[in-house]
Length: 236
Length: 236
DNA sequence: CGGTGGGTTGAGAACTATCAAATCGAGTGG
DNA sequence: CCACTCGATTTGATAGTTCTCAACCCACCG
Image: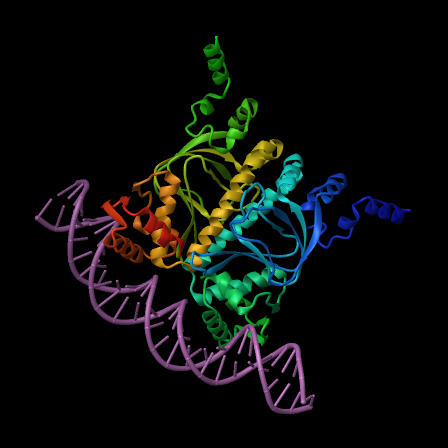
């Protein structure tokens, strides 16, 4: 009985949402079943190959959505093409610029990724009508703003070594990995996040390795040998 | 008759809001009269002298509010005390961290300032009950996030000269001044916004002056002689 | 008139970027 | 299984920018 009821509840959801990878952690988890059904009618799933760009900086902000799997970068460029990554988004994060005309940055897949996307104007209307969504969006945006401002301290005031240590700590925290960290970024991407060059990132890593604070078993793998020391350096 | 009615409408507002400096541009302008009356009961005016700090980074986020007059800085520091200004707020801007336990940055008056402040928990409750306020807050937060990310490009990728030019352009745009710009920041504060030292800021300014792009009639006054050139440099 | 605080200028040190070369690793074909 | 190749990474040498420390200037004030 109990089990049947549960199954019954689940099947009441739109099929795409019932099996959603990020159900319960994305913005939609603020909605009840009827709201979810309404929202699901506005959206659809898309996939991106690593390197594909969903939105270009300055273009019309036509899509918003949730990341289901994979990782994406948010980036801007100077007039002569120098790039800065201004955010990295993980599954269950929200992307796009609701209530805005143009996209303030490019959104590009770092890995193969799948998303659940909505037309922006339709989503805007939905968010106005469903205050739970508006509020969930607000909480996320406030948290993102905190994170962005915290990163400004790194970009404005920390040395290369401190920046690299901070990034490792951030990735470890965000992915919940204790000792072994799988790096989701190439050296070039690390450089673009940290406002450095690839060579400087590489040198900072080897210095941390020589100091015995980390080890590098593979290009995309890293072991934090002395978490305390690493955090101390990251603090600046 | 018409005039009397109008006066009648106005006097229905809480007296403090009726005479508010930023009425019509602060977050409260999303509210109708009854909402405004309810909100006004939660808040009160305070004044800060230049240099006074309202909220400290890491402390409990007990206050939120609107800036009525003056300017404030939002700042964070590294473990060893290097400071980065992560935001400058003007009249009608919102300050504080709604829906958060601790303040992510310090809030300090740059000039003498007056604010309309609310207890955070009371304001949070109010914002949940009045979706207009929640939505206004969301729009502001999204705009702040755009601005913060845009500044990350400056901090991560622009040279000292480009940073100083960008700051001048930003201040000119934000204060709506065309030729003559009154600098709201000291050289040290400019340095703290730009992630530079005071000496580097000074040198960048004299280089712009020698190039005939700006002139400096006073320490806190600046004339943009060649707006096009300045913007070109600022683009990076 | 000396002191004070903010700002500018100068010289040298430190850090990071740039350019170039060497190395590593994964995938490929023999 | 091994040599080969291509792209990514590391390492080295050097140049350029920014920081640091110090001196100096200037307006303001008691």
